[in-house]
Length: 412
Ligand code: ADP
Image 1 (cartoon, rainbow, N blue to C red):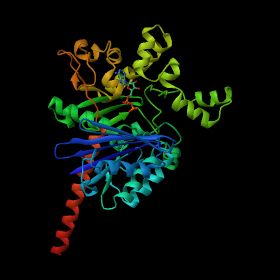
Image 2 (spheres, helix red, strand yellow):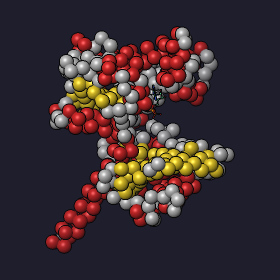
Image 3 (cartoon, rainbow, N blue to C red):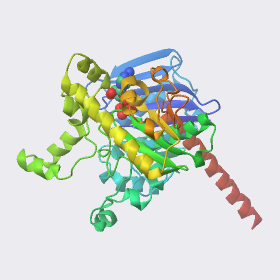
Image 4 (tube, protein in one colour):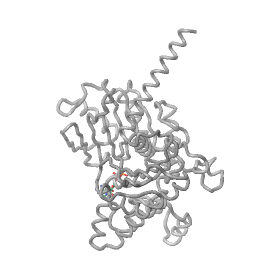
């Protein structure tokens, strides 16, 4: 079975074609600057990369180009579109509607549309991806895999804000959490590595990328996660502040005479480590600047690490312990010094880092010492593989259901 994994952003898209027999990526690529004068498609197959620059006016044209190149003689990996058995779509926000992946029907698209207000930057592009895919591959099933789904196991004690209850009931204000696909993948992978029962472990996952979030997972269920109604809450991020005194917003709007849009922009694009340092949102550039004596760059990294440490403590308290702590995503997988700083002085909680093992980047590796009571691992995330596995599972279950219905109909 071949799964075409599609992740559509507002002006870009990423894709992979995964052969599920061996879970190998047959082709992958991205299209960027859709709708701009010069857009480009970058397509990779085993050892071969091709870049095509041209004006790609919309997602329809972008996906058409991707499907063409997947079937092309020089750079293709399939003979025709029938070789794509299912399309797995990454969808950011499913609200409270879906706690797992689903086969996409018209009713599902309508439900996703209702959630546009909760993810105005992401859901519209995700929906366009689904619609274009249905148009270009009408016979191929589409499966939606949601960033929010894994966190739907949280109890009201974790997901409810201490705000007027009607805001939840009438406006959907609650914690949803994001990066669910990644938290699910690395936590399940962690249990496999330890050769322990996932349903018996207490796990803390740190997805530290440009967007960053953590999750506390007890017996396979999310107890709490750091992102909230939107991906602004929780950890300090590349350009987002994470936890804030909500009183800052009306205060600064008055002080600096700012509009809602301006504040929203500042919170999404000009805060986080970029806001503090004034240098960059990229931890490689921050490390370089700090090395050269830039105090604000150093401070930004320190504040980032402190926030992660604070959440580790909080999640251990909530779960009554932790067996496994996992780092993933761009910073979590690569920033050796950041991991080291986060884990400093946690020995009294049973967390002891091995600095030699920690001195590795981008690899699946244990970084805790042999005497550490808590296992600490770096596990590279693979959201595309989760989407492909989910898409395969949903389609196979659907086929089973249809067959069972047919058998039952024949019997009656
Ligand atoms: P997202 O998917 O949220 O855009 P990623 O998970 O790709 O983010 O993480 C990107 C971030 O990872 C970069 O902004 C940078 O801060 C960090 N990063 C990537 N590689 C390294 C590295 N070698 N050392 C330190 N930080 C790194």
